[in-house]
Length: 182
Ligand code: APR
Image: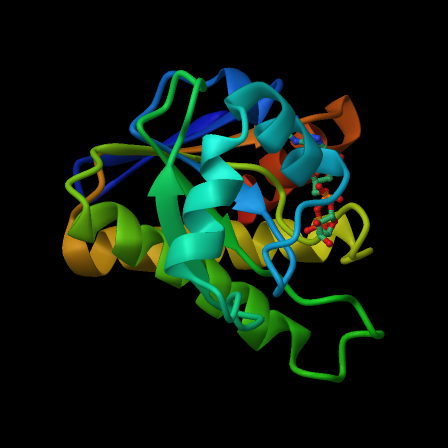
């Protein structure tokens, strides 16, 4: 199974695991537009990172964050330096602009990483849990956006996708294969 792709000298990598354990410069949260906390990735980040993360997002982003965008905060007690809170779309069947919103959420995360001098960033599979985006389709969007970003900007040095289940890892690996051959 392919789990690493080099694009413009930088790496896109797939691993199975927990995004909150990653020792990278920035990890990405699968947040909601009120930045109100929740279950899944969001719950794990606030549980393990402690209360300073929510205190900071409340202070800096009182209006939350629109769907398809992202905002950045410190990472509290997590091993990363930053948390980038991305708001992916809720899946409504695929005809409501979901792919464009998922693309822009990933792109904004990568822009924020570069703006904050992060050389490495770890993403979960945004929108594929509570928001019910089909993981096969989300994988194509997430990896395609990362590929294009590295092609265009040549940074960050490492974009890692941390997939919680074996099934999600296999979906991403299949999407990886199609990008690698294109
Ligand atoms: N590390 C990596 N992946 C994880 C983790 C974790 N610790 N926990 C869950 N996942 C996986 C899920 O299996 C799913 O594939 O991350 C993916 C995204 O799932 P969610 O966290 O449910 O995110 P999303 O679908 O974007 O829904 C966001 O859920 O928790 C609420 O506040 C959040 O309202 C927002 C919504």
